[in-house]
Image (cartoon, rainbow, N blue to C red; front, side):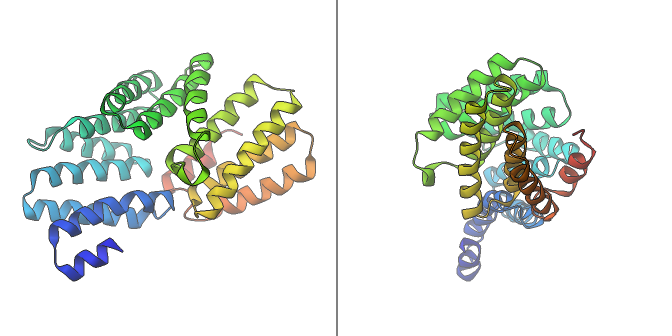
Length: 273
């Protein structure tokens, strides 16, 4: 790995960057503590090197890990540290900080302000030409709008992001976008097309395709959500045995420690059916 290569080369700048970049694939695979350790190590090395941009990036990355683990107060603290960093700010980092603010606000159920933060981040990413991050922001804005009862706007945002991703070859679809987009689209279509078997079958095919891709790349945190979505769709199609099978698989996948961070797991267990 790049971290091992950096250690062998005794290059602390390389090691700092390798640690901070290793966080994102770790989060996608559900390696929560490993991601946390990598972020802390990268931030510590940046501080020891007194490198301003590294210090800012370290605070931002630790905030992103904290948000993924639903530690909202810690995420907000790291976000503020990054904002207050005297050097290293540029358009992409500031857009990431707006996006992180949206995650924190959504985690605290302040969906009105969260939608605004995601919208602002999306505009900034679009202006920079970073379409992956712009699409991610649109999806999170759509989720916030759905929680606010603004379904038509949520549908428009989600469908636009999903169609742009679906046009790509499967191997080119970023997991951080493709799986959430498929899940949100299934949720929205279930509400809009209740009782329409053709639409439910089409959606089931889309979710099953995403599930196969998630299994192929070991995207553990998405498996139980995709399986639960399939179980729900099979119930709508009156396919009882298939629904039970997917529900059992979803439960097994949810029990995997990599499926969600401990706070996320507790929240899911408390959530109404």
